[in-house]
Image (cartoon, rainbow, N blue to C red; front, side, top):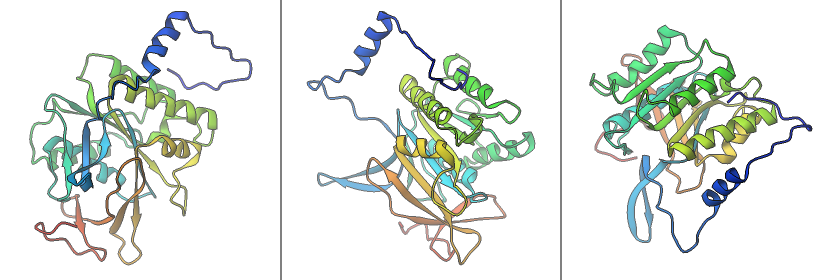
Length: 289
């Protein structure tokens, strides 16, 4: 659906059938407790009613956000999450856990890079999975050549089609490229409403990657504000002052339990990230952060 501005003259008249369908869907029967959303990606543990469980950061049917300044390895961080969902765990981050059904897929959208760099970004996930054939589980797409409205239509088309199995999670690396102007309030709200509709209709998790406004922890523009307000989880990545290749990840906002902040560094030889302490030293795999 194209992103269009709404004017004061816009009138929307829905049918009685539409209203009845929405009424049945929207009404919450307090005598029937809904099933708790399935956890997809977790970091660490949380304690509730005396029980220790995985701290699910991403759950099905919800929206999340990874927000950081430019060149903060947002895409690489996302690759580690994708590999964790495919592999179940991640050697670089020992407290991470993935919980994808074996029949479910991952849809990964990149809006910024050309084919050469997009290939290497997506192939990083395969390398993290030790070269396993992930072609039937992981579907990467480069949408740099499309317009913002075409990108929305393309994602919408994939979810509606039978070309791939419905994914457990959809990554949109460059959500700002799905609108003409991230500071347009109407366009931003309309896009976020569209994303939320995807999470609801297909019971998938959508993880949006977005830049921070310069010098702040705020996601870019009205779009960033709209995403943060609706997100289940907002993860911030921040470069540390003492080491240009050491970064801090922390839970900025959450509907559930937050995870403890942790640090990671970039390995130039492998192109992967590695959990470390706050001065860039790698953490022993036998020690939980």
